[in-house]
Image (spheres, protein in one colour):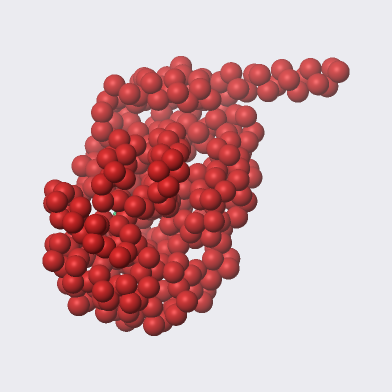
Length: 379
Ligand code: MUC
Ligand code: MG
């Protein structure tokens, strides 16, 4: 009885913690080589590490990746949003009561990646405080997940080699091939990947790089190559073109840049989109769960997408994908941390094309202080 009493009071003490500080640190993580896609090129991972400190001595961490061409956020704007807006408002907040934390952050619109990193860092902290992994806190449907990897621009031969290496070394069999350049080059790239890994599951992502005519031209060859979805083929401003394409398309159209929020998803699912990319880096856990529920209610396929996260971002995606039994059988884009030559936390290990979901509290990883001092870019 007294033991039980001690355990109970310890638990209450640790879940009664408050946020005492929120920190944003710019980093510059090296890449093995730059990664290109139709809307941009990443030459260095100029991410932001967000840390939320509690009075219990525990610290929650998450990573934001600036993608100015998608969200209008830069590394500088993420730093400013976290330091000037979110940090002062979160002081004194209970990290376990995530809706209260979201409410105090709500007065600043936009700033999706900054906001999502703060929410994930709070969840990491909450998990540590209650001694439960984020994957389990979110639903804990699975302890192992299949992964997919994005194949970035290169020559068709280079792209095929990348897929072969990922297949042979790590057992990955699902690839999102980046297209949205010249149609002939795009089709040649997809064909090269298909011929190199014959039984792979393939989908493509044009990152809004095609015109309607180009997308139509590419479609028959993509269909013949067994491509299962075309993510964001056209400029979002071409609403009529996107609708026309999807109405005549034998291949489902995926929404990514058009699906930044629950509201966006509702609009797009009623329009051209029949597969939704959920990205934890922009909708964190709460809004992602709402998007997933919306997809379920409308029989729309949901996948967990990536924006070339480092390992810390990948762990957050893994936790969310583990929350739901159907998501946990859908290959999750959580392998492109492999593009990095250095990282802040231990990366997921991919074996036979799968990752194990951590059962340690929170996201299950700690920032390596040596790596942080090596890669922080604030001197
Ligand atoms: C993707 O799915 O489009 C590239 C930039 C970004 O924000 O996301 C990626 C991948
Ligand atoms: Mg995409």
